[in-house]
Image 1: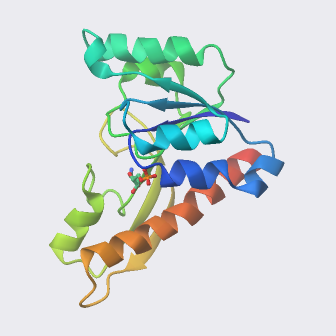
Image 2: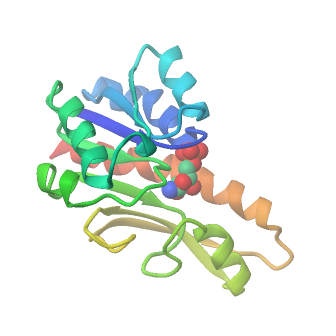
Length: 187
Ligand code: GRF
């Protein structure tokens, strides 16, 4: 199974998927990292692993449609089965969705439909919930609204700091995303 990973930041999920030996053994191949931020740490993580990178700045394009068209064109060089979003901080539009219907998957650090958007962990924490979690879902035209594939809950303990909760959430992300990908490989 050939995938493209889209990421904008640190890339801990990218790294975790790329280094997963079980996924590699079952035939997962990250063909390319697509990144919209030239200074993102994830780029170096891809290069170190010999994974192709496509760095593309939205600002270089007249509009989002042209921006995504450039990505579609690049991906056409590979036979991409799935696009995995891993901390990609942009909304996906129909330009990409129409090319990859139900083939774009995202990880979100909260229990959707609760706390969508870019501050999922913090928003849940500030709301004072006693449990939050991680969601893996297909992308549709909304923001964090697509069909849910898997969720895992995590308790928010009394006196827990936001930082501690973030660490717990990322730990769960690093288990849940590979397990969902493994299921896709087994289909
Ligand atoms: C993760 O929390 C993910 O759920 C969210 O963005 C974060 C990316 O972290 N969409 P990283 O870049 O994979 O470390």
